[in-house]
Length: 393
Image (cartoon, rainbow, N blue to C red; front, side, top):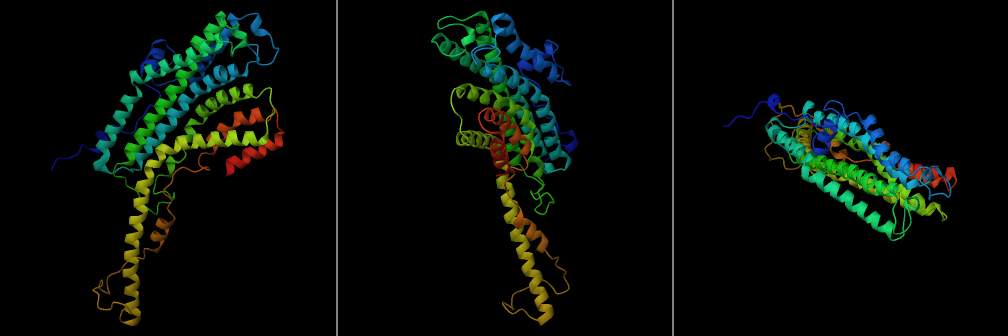
């Protein structure tokens, strides 16, 4: 029989989620980051300057005008949402995501939760994920989609819609061209690149879920030993805050001249939160099947052993079994441990990993930009009550 490689020789537990790929290599070549230092705060400031500050300078002195609301550069909330808050948050999130996902993957190896014979397959899954993470094709597609969004915005502007500060219908200023052809593609590229890398992580988790896992029904975490995964979405709280800022800013610009009702705000915030939770529920749902199998198998074995133990107690007390007395049973001097606590633990085991309480920081950061927009037209107490209701549902 062929022997598997020793566990120590299998490279499994390291997963630098935001390293690799042509964009990382370009930034490394430019000295913006290193493999052991993503320098996220510095790069966030640089990209904000490229996306927001350069058009401000190109549009001087008109870009410094403050009136009317939404039609000058400084009062256009969509620019602040996408090119300052969103881009800054998307870049700052990289270090946060990389650190937290590394911890989660190392937990699998340290526990260890993966059976020794499955470790080579786990290492292969990580290797495949790292290859996909660094895909040149994926980043090329992200960049192409970013420029498609920019082309759509240019067309919209030339037809007379949007970006009042960037020129008139049929004409675009230098600042407008920069915003449309540099700032907007940069925003979309960073966002889509982040989505791609989360998809790769999701694919890796689902691959691990299909392996033989060393789970136990009466684990104190109540999730067979997998509860540590439940809060992994919190690693993306800054990322989702950035995305929410971009969406909320666009929403604020759209409803600036209209009355916003608490009912409308409830629908928007509740719907957006549901989409975000569904986004993170997908990778975690892969562990539902092994946890369900663990629950059912443990309850079956524990119930079988409980029957044997209780029938043995019955024979000791009554010198016979009341029902099926002729059935062959374990010897009276064989001690059968009481499986009652194990059975009860298995009965209470929930196969679902995602819970609102576990990802409260993510939920709060997701709702915050919309809450800020809401208090511009709705009393603060009403908005606060709505946020509490959505977080505690």
